Image (tube, rainbow, N blue to C red):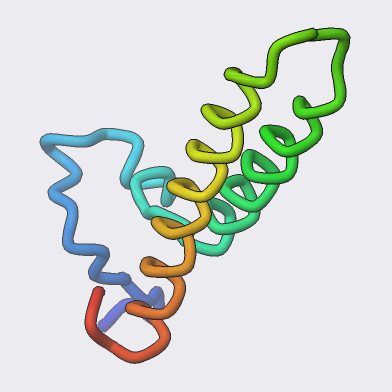
Length: 84
């Protein structure tokens, strides 16, 4: 008699990655987008501080802009189908 259980093809070999059986090898891109957004907000929140010089402000803004550019590129690319 045939089994009624559905086997999902995740593209990951269970012999190589044992945790794939529980679904832990799948990347959730929405989680990474939310995390990236919080990183950008956190970097911009560091602008308010007790530093006298503003050299580090340029670095914080630069890294936040870089992270935001990567985040937007990934989000837009996945939505348009350019990135899988």
